[in-house]
Length: 88
Image 1 (cartoon, rainbow, N blue to C red):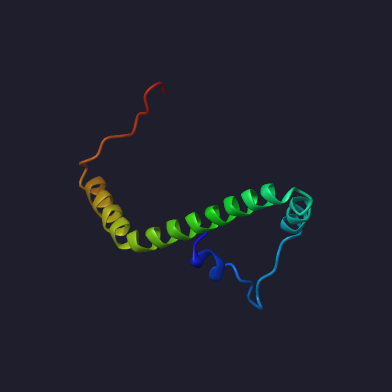
Image 2 (image 1 turned 30 degrees about the vertical axis):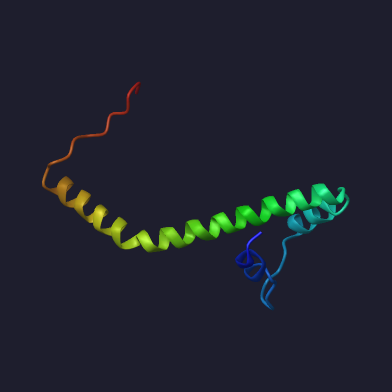
């Protein structure tokens, strides 16, 4: 587990847990300690991966906007062909 995962997952005054997540944690609390740790590691890894994806995606917005503008310009200039998926 990274330090980031611990500090970012510390509940704030505004955070609330859904009933389903509460139910999942209640069920998980009945597992043996090693299984609880494995589940916790998996959840933390998923949350951290999601955070990394969000960070990468935020940084790519200008590039995506530029590429979208280029594609629209090409379409308006009639430089594109209709999309015909194979097998359709």
